[in-house]
Image (cartoon, rainbow, N blue to C red; front, top):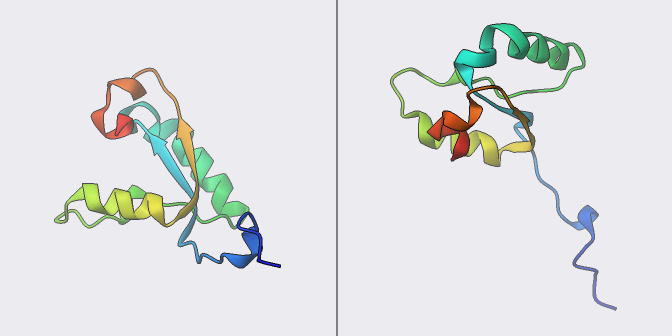
Length: 89
């Protein structure tokens, strides 16, 4: 009998991050996001932090790699989230 293609145990992925938070920085970075990341750290949940991106490097490939290397994405909606092209992409 052929192995089931829906079996998740046959596929293993080593995630770099547990969570990729998607947010509009100016809306939530110093308020909600800082508390959210602190709680994730407290629970030993590894979250991508955009402060880890080197300032001289292009942010686009770094973010795409971080999204691919994250188990889940958490979207933090805020008043201006949809006005950010980065967030919408």
